[in-house]
Image (cartoon, rainbow, N blue to C red; front, side, top):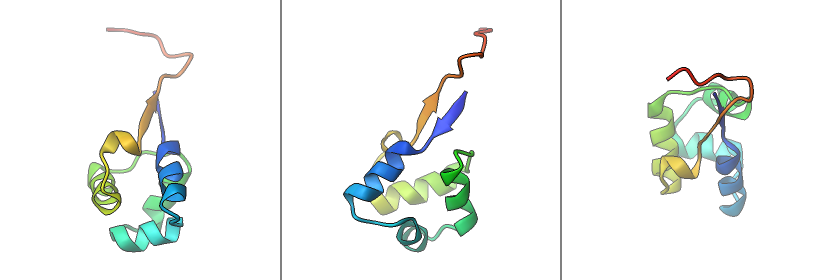
Length: 74
């Protein structure tokens, strides 16, 4: 399973914000923004700060993508 932040980037466009604006207003490090840009996992605290800044829910910025080659071993 992988993570997608496409919803976050679309939301930033809708709000006419740049990544550097989000970084500054949310009080998160540039490293965290870079991780999200690369589709890497960041901590829940980071996501909470982003949601608080953008006045949204976590489902509005993050999406989990099922990998094609992942077997379901429930």
